[in-house]
Length: 321
Image (cartoon, rainbow, N blue to C red; front, top):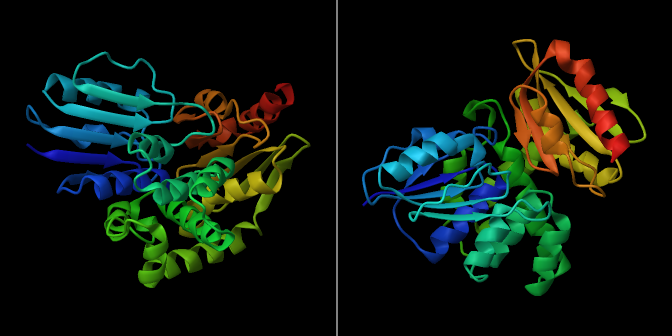
């Protein structure tokens, strides 16, 4: 029997799998990629009785591949917080899906494991910019202010590392980062012991954020703001976490970070207002290659001719809500 661990390459996906493998250590085939590479089940070929664990990737975007795996006799655990579409009814599918805006995959796994590796769930929640949820779990864990700050930074840095058009844009491939992290049952020990990894992520994050804060503002209103980043590696890496930072700085406003691509399209990251975590998925789904969840969504390749329409719809969506 083979085991496949299929996970999003961001903080939430990595931290969810770190929890699972600390509780149930075993050898598995890792299937992951950059954060926006979510059609991951297409890569998996199984034999009857193989186990597939799927973490933090949209079931709706992987529905055909999931049906194939189940038909081929795989046993599937599917844990996610994105809109799933129609969830198949199948005896070999264990689906743990929750699309509430204050939930992420790491928190769902933490619940399934009864808090056995809960500090990693705190990291995952911070990485998904769910600060209230992360802090609530941190209080339950009796973590102090310094410890919370370290876990928040780690979550942000892990999430930051997942963004990019390809693995070449990243500081670490997500599977490599996972293998470095999974050796530690406590992320605080990881931060202390593997200072090389933590330090590289930290310095890269701050360098890229400094450049991002000098970026061009495309449009700014009372309800939304959109920023343009250039077609460069640092911009692709920082696009998502910069959107989170803008959301935290102005929680009443929606934000979009657009990154230029070589083919006359834009990579788009949208953050709903933190005070109104709705409609980001609906907005992005109006455009080709768009999707996500209520609080945070994106468009992989927005055509340049749709830019003004997108900016209008961004403002209109949150003017009405």
